[in-house]
Length: 163
Image (cartoon, rainbow, N blue to C red):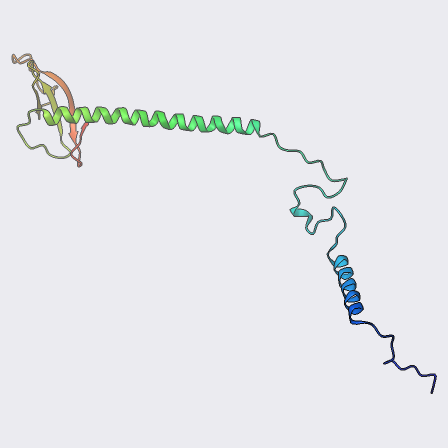
C-alpha cells in the first residue's frame, strides 16, 4: 500500500503565494478575453473609416459648392419674401390713406357693409361720399366742379376697399 499516493499530501503553498498565483491567473484570462487584434471592429458597418489597408481612402466632401448653392437659395427666398412683404406694406399704407380720406370726408348717410360708394372732392378741398357714381352724372354740366377720387366698398371689418 505504499504505492498509493495520498491526494491530501500536496506541497504546501503559503497564503501570500496563493494570492499571487490567483492574481496572475485572473489577469492573464482578462487580457485574453478583452484584447482584440488591432484594427478590428465589432460592427464594421458603424465605422466611419476603413479597418484595413485595402479599405477605400477617406476623402472629405467638398462643401464649398454646397454652401454657395444653399446661400444663394436662402438669399433668393428671403429676397422674394421681402419683396412680397414690401408690396403688401405699400398696399396697406394705401388702404390706410384711403380710409383716412373717407372717414374724414363728409358722409350724410349711414353706409352699409358690402355696398359701393364714391368719393369726391370739392374745389375748396372738402371731400364727401356719394351714392351716385361718376358715370351716372356729370357735375360739370350742372355747374359743379367736383373731382372724383375713387369708388370704395365697405368691408365687414369697417375698412374701405378701393375698387
